[in-house]
Image (cartoon, rainbow, N blue to C red; front, side):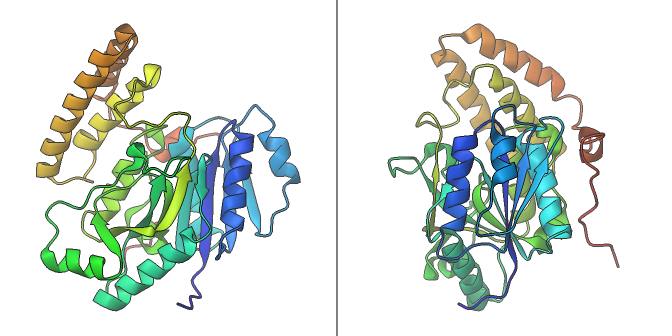
Length: 318
């Protein structure tokens, strides 16, 4: 496929300079490279700022250093806004600083998007890479399940181009059409970490098509090989609060999906707490998360006040 589309990669980083370097090498070493890279540094306290100050890669790199850590969620809000408004992206390719896209990751994602458009006349909202751990095994934290309720025609159309219809994806190498960002807005910065990707990708795919293809691969350099059921310690608070925000404060999921997802979360939380060696910490996070979920997330402008002047990426209503 010959594509003239502008692709901008967005990487959010915090105190992981060596992993960030691996991420940038993966992006710039691909068979196709993006037109620009936006790196959002969440006020790192290691040598990330010095590394980025001296970084001179083969792709134009726009570094945004924030004065405070607003988490992965806030970082993606800033990076995606900048990619769309300052770099005029047609596709935004987003990932954390522990992601290592493999050489064909971007090329295959673009090819899948175009092949599906030619097959159906519809451009998919996003294409998610297959995510593997450092040893090549499918990473359970990023496993994407086929979309429930997809029609046989829709499943067949995806299969013919080597893809699978999905409902949501993690922010580990996902290629999003800028038109979707203009239509649906940005992620929710107040999530800070975890489930911001679930909410956002489910939001933009609720009425559209989302795909994953095994031909596009990214390594996820997490410390351990495990899924969301692994003991998260104090971060369990974000898992509980943010999942409840998705289920009660967002229109990303249909009512029947909210019922199914809530049941699954309750089962997972019960298993996680039961298996933990420090149940007191998880129970404290559960209680705090339940309590704080009763209040709606703050607006992105409130979260980023004094840190970054956010602009509106949405297309004006005509």
